[in-house]
Length: 188
Image 1 (cartoon, rainbow, N blue to C red):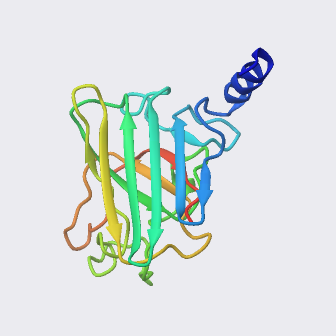
Image 2 (cartoon, rainbow, N blue to C red):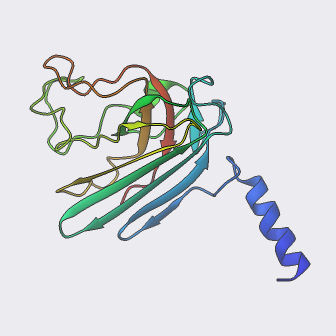
């Protein structure tokens, strides 16, 4: 690789809004996103943190989606977040913004007519994408799940990291506390 090409590649990466990858890649069979969490600003970010203690700026995230005839598989990895902690994580309907609520509701394959949805008939890991994970002593953790369906185009736009594990009790199903961070994902 010539010096000029290497310099151009390095400057493109450095100009990326989060420093790891451009906007993320959408594939006909899924999406791949690698990003670095940053503080919220007036600009839409690839990955934003709302709680710098739990998800510090500079922590990293990857999200991979693969689709096939049998449905969709999603994989989430966090690096450098609060160690030895369980986080809830879900796919949300809107992109991340500068406020935690900008990401909208959980994506549901069959939409609950009553929102916010806390009915276990709708708020469950078969109808939503739940990616709860527990980090190790370094603050790294991973989670994967598969669902028997594909996202409706344009209706799944982000993954939100929540304060604690997802509740399953009636009247609280699907809740996982405060929205700590968000990553935009171009789900297929």
